[in-house]
Image 1 (cartoon, rainbow over the protein chains, first blue to last red):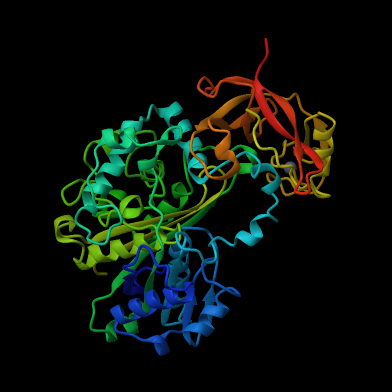
Image 2 (image 1 turned 180 degrees about the vertical axis):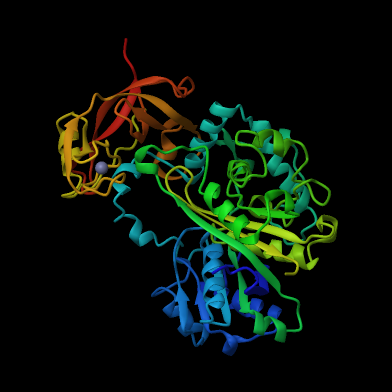
Length: 388
Length: 140
Ligand SMILES: [Zn+2]
């Protein structure tokens, strides 16, 4: 059974805040959940399924279902880091296609700047079987991705200047987003001259850290047809976990090599059909490798691809992250998957910021990467259309 | 500068590795069914699913598969920058996350030959725990 055309994104909401000292974590979940429902023209009694990840405080999602006053017969708090919300969207679409539910609410919230429970199920991390072999070496999050970048540079000749081009494109888009945390356009030189964090990643190769959140509402065709707002059909999805490969890890690719083809096959299209992409951008290297893995360029050719202006909206061959992405706009709760879907939906609705709205945007792809490229990660890809 | 050395917490499944480290020996698990050399240490073969695992002494030699010199990091590691985080590919196959020590952090490169060193480590109570498996450039 395919989910193609069975489930629709009816509502989206990105929290306008980037620094929220006076909102509790449950309040932020509620802010974004109610916002996405209102965007769809729905309200909490319509919801019959709820999804969140390790960022939902309390006893899995039970606490949040109770707090929000939902009546749910489907729930899921699978934790794959920043890709969790794309995975949840896939699972919601599957449940809708099977006829089990009609209205799924997915929320993300976090306060990495101003306290609150850290997402990621951190209490469980110490019990992980790999912990005694990975926790002793001073691997920061940028340090882990730096290992991937170094190997990619070694094998393919990728350069720091090429990685910087990704940040430049994101900043060029972010100047048009009045809510972006960073709205100044930067140059390749400014990226290279920003402080080195872990070779070869500079500070400006890293995403921002923000409080906030986001939410989406996914509905059945019957519900979509009852709403005033045009809903966005989900055409294809794919998920793949790239493990540490039995201790023979290849740092130059991600699980997108499999999640991408799964989604493209289900949608019945190819990478060249895509008009807009939201690519997970925890770091510049994450974008470059993912573009190769999804088949937008040849393996090893990502550096050249991102340097040719392809990513620049609205006229590049493959406009990306037109909200400024995690690199400039927002990376709420240290997780970028939700905002990736939100900006793709804006593009398909024609509601992106005017200077970066892609003309005739009919097919969009959103991709999430959770965990660490240095160890184990989960990739989820979702393809959406303006219409069926 | 000496890097932070917090001892790992071993358990019954990975104890042979840490008992080896305490004796200054690199002891790895190997699948008794398909001969796969397993990393990270555990009593299941991720290649064939067997729980029949034996342990053997590895050479301690390898080459750097990837490395990064970290220059900014919060906490205790921030006091020892720059330091080298790396994956070392052992002669026996596994790629092992580690630090490269006894080196100039500015001159460590992918492909360099390295050898194992076991560095003293303390557990949370300040008591000696299993030493840490780090690597240094191959001597001579
Ligand atoms: Zn085996």
